[in-house]
Image (cartoon, rainbow, N blue to C red; front, side, top):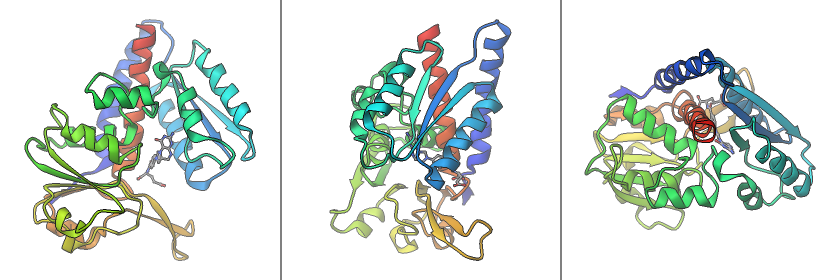
Length: 292
Ligand SMILES: Nc1nc(=O)c2c([nH]1)NC[C@@H]1CN(c3ccc(C(=O)N[C@@H](CCC(=O)O)C(=O)O)cc3)C=[N+]21
């Protein structure tokens, strides 16, 4: 069994990015610039956005963090996005989700200039992904692809089962795995809350992607011997023995599942770190497309 270490794979991606940014800076050109909008003060969102900003600095990107109050109006948030759309120094725009209930998330996603849509959540980006056209791939599925690439795992012809059909992970992941490319060409089954016989379907998976957001949902009796297991879950569960008062749990019961697998991603330290690597890669891509 190999542990698909996100720290190792993300470091490799970031080293490549840093080299490219160094060359850009040496040429006297401006650095790629990511603008992130964080609304309110959700603990997990704070952690993720802080990590994104820090990692931008590590590879030489410029970043701007815009913080808005939890009770911000939709109108004000849309105005902020419009000003970032119109700011030529901004290459990528990220609005951290989830948003408070007075804001229509879909409206916000559609307000972002597709040329700066480094999350790949805009319907124009999602549509291109479905048609196999070049686009911004949502960061988590992109990160998983980079992980498969780093560890040189084969996907062609395999049966991939994706649990979860969200616009940010499950659905784009299933599209990528079924696409005609190096880390696709799978036969894909998408499972969700209405799926009958989930366990039997999971047992047929050569590649099992758990992206449903239920801690330790995937048990050993749902996993085929020798499968590749990708755990996208990151739920904070209360734990008074932990320093911060919580622990992070994946969607896979790691301890019982890992021994059966050929390869598995840990949580934390797996897909989450690759998600940020995917976002950074998209930001450099946006820079190149916008500024040559
Ligand atoms: N517009 C938008 N884009 C996103 O890409 C987006 C989002 N909204 N909302 C929330 C999800 C979640 N997400 C993560 C990013 C990093 C880690 C990460 O770094 N995880 C580390 C640390 C975990 C921790 O310490 O909490 C790990 O898994 O080892 C996890 C999850 C991005 N998301």
